[in-house]
Figure 1: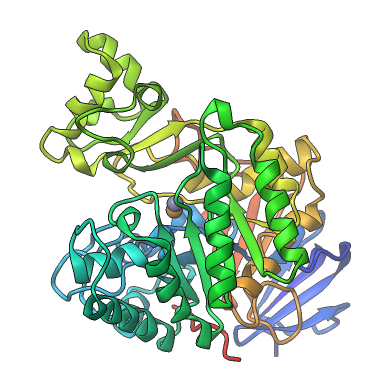
Figure 2: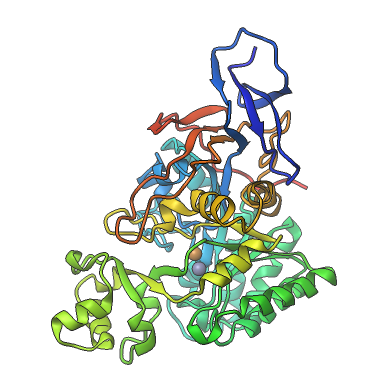
Length: 487
Ligand code: ZN
Ligand code: CU
């Protein structure tokens, strides 16, 4: 007997196929029937009239490694219709770790584990609302073995780094991530990254990269990523594809063309994008503290600033003029304060046209890159990414159709990241589902007021359990840390 039947919904199955009307039933965590379901003996009936039923959205680019433990309700993701998150992006992952020490991801939670198996039991013990898939991060393994050394690894160091990557893959990670713009990743050369990427090839894993450059040298950085994928024989996922800095706006067209050409000659390459014209990350990573870039300083807004909480949400230029100093001096003022290095900033550096170009591309999936530091004013992408694509870019601007948008939030995301038996409304798949109103779904979170849940998402099921019910978080806690697909 089915536990739940959703009736009279408009079903968008995640494959990109046209919508159709019908009922969907859930039994023991799985989708058990699709069509005209006559049984009446179900525990729960949900009316889907005028609503879209789709596979739960997969946030392929997150930094939720620590949040799954700190905020297991994951309200900021569930309320967007997300049922799974890929963690360990940009080269920063919660594994490997030294038990009892801070993790080397962006959360810095205290690790009660050393590897993915340990992380999995810790996270599942906290009953997270959503599923997670792990990438093992280059910055993390490099810091563990080499601290902040600005040199190539010796053979021993490289082989220990490789062992960390292999162990993560054995324990179910989906691939290896880099953040080559950040320390210590930026001190690595292409050969080091290639060597470690080769370690995921026997597992069919992916190489997910925050590339070495996303502004003046974007195209060269794409070349490096494609080279690593080709030489290692693995699929490449280009993270948060963008062209930063006004003089580079429009360049995403060229980098997409480069990727299309590589795909035409046999490479496997996909990308992700967040639907905003500002980025966000640890401020200390973007500036030379002795000589802060004045152009970038102009574009900075503070998200979390433990040293000066009253600066959160404000533009740095505004703070500078209040203090009677220049913007680069304000960078130094913030970063040199006690705890200043914990500052998370927002950089307003991208072009709206490039966001649209990315969203139109068939191989681009949606990923928030949200940083779940809820103490400050996080970039609104943390709460708004998926409804923003559906509300603004699909409904209001008709940049892409709804079926295509859903495909690139679901089946494409699951296929690339190895979330097996998910991402499609199909009998026998896990019942990760979202029921939303296509006429009202919209992000509410803004730069000024970023911790606002979106509207128009009615119900969310994770592994067959209802996680979200018309604005109410049920705390069902049905999420799992997934194992990468077995070949
Ligand atoms: Zn990144
Ligand atoms: Cu990231």
